Length: 122
Picture (cartoon, rainbow, N blue to C red):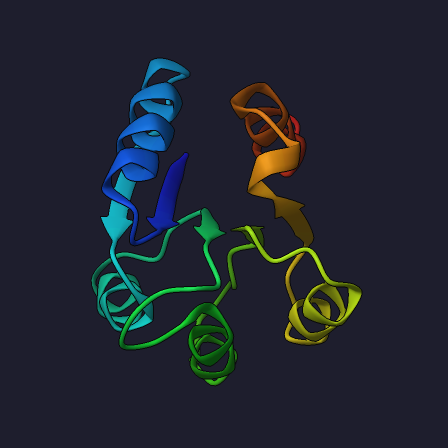
């Protein structure tokens, strides 16, 4: 399973990517929404972990553009953010995310469980 991590914090990128690779996932990385869209054009991931606060193209703008892409199958998007207001969650859900996690309120085991829960049974 290929996961695209869309995150601008180098430390979090390293934490997420190392742990996901240890769990057997293939990982691609994008530092903002523009890089994520370019990455998806080259290889559509099975799952997207998306930060909302990023330079150049933030997560909301990415989601708006992502929803316009013509893909045979759209990968689920899980938001990982420090935003914790209900209106942020509502806006992201309206843009089609499958889940919304506040970074400070969760750990990698929970993130991995969410990603694994999205996989079809073998």
